[in-house]
Image (cartoon, rainbow over all chains, first blue to last red; front, side, top):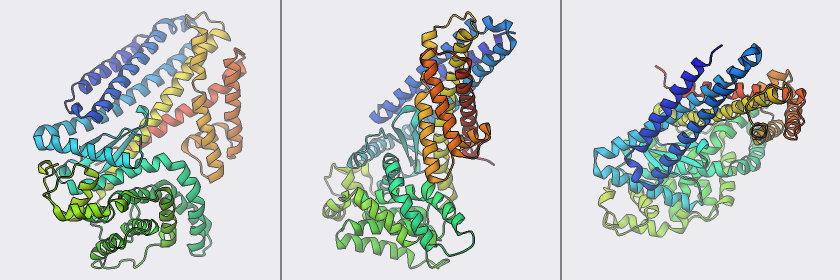
Length: 381
Length: 154
């Protein structure tokens, strides 16, 4: 019986962690405050992992040899130590993935000064909209290859939000980040939303699904899809409406360009359901007529030219269920940002690009509303 | 909607969940190491150079995790749906009834309290160990499954 191999494994993992610490420490994009904070959190995490490895090393060097006489006990502890080391190794994989994300972002910023400037503005915009929704989580925004968010629970309340590198210099597309921030809003209220809404959704599913022998199985199946997939996406879209109204819807349609707006293929609900929930939310909070009209026109401009594969949404995603979600969100956030600032955003959009507006919460929807290609780094803020 | 858009957002969600589960498996795994050492030291009277107080403290740190599992079980009973971790406990104990699994977790929490009060009977160690081993393996397996689903395939 020898501890030689397990000690070599510890050395190897320790070596990997030291390299990762070096790499994180040398990232240049860390001069953006929120990214800096997260990078420092990763470095602290690596340091604490190095300490944990020292504990394992101590057990291997001090306790394992004492157990050599009792083969069963030795093997038991040895296996448990290997299990723990294996989990440390797996975390190295996750840390490397996180590093790759930040490294890619750094390379994009290195390519052009404007990119770095735009990334700083994106971070400012996301901070501002998160603040508007009273979201306390740390939300650095980086560029990658899609609109996405990565919750990092091991660091506490941290979400890395991602914007496609190709859209970094297109401020009208930044409005889509409201959807990603909406996912954080959903996570914060998750238990409450699910407890309050799911029984109602199940009841409506039971009411609207056609009568058939296995109806109860279908109620359960769709109820699970609502719970696991659709509700969070729809609430993220309502968040888009809260912060951007028709500006968000316009860019969402532009981004998704979905030829089958009433059908769905995977985890996201159909585009038409996403439009309905936004519109119903804005109706519920008594948004001004002009804003509602613009929402309807934006949708109709797209929808009226699409051949109906299915003329209506399926019964498990029908308007009544969507209304229930919209009404719930109207009670949760009765005074949305877009309603309180609608006139100002309209005014700004008519003055673009010659505006002196410092608040990106107002400027971004104004740019998106007129679908303008503006170099935001040149706007006189 | 483009397939790429879906794949990427789902990928990060899976990776996030996998990371969280890996951390859970690691924490429970570390508790199992401390539990074994404490058992060797106190029940088997093997003269290890570990501090009994420190080991006991490290074992007790798993309590919030077990309480969280208990909350998951309560939700599972309410919503008639089980998580992969609960499923693994059903397999380990051979019970389909989630209420009985709930009792097993409560038993383990009770055993943990005994150990924390220096009541070092073998049965308290065995009860705790059986539950933790099952949870650690299941969390690790689920984490692997999520990572392999998140990785792009050719």
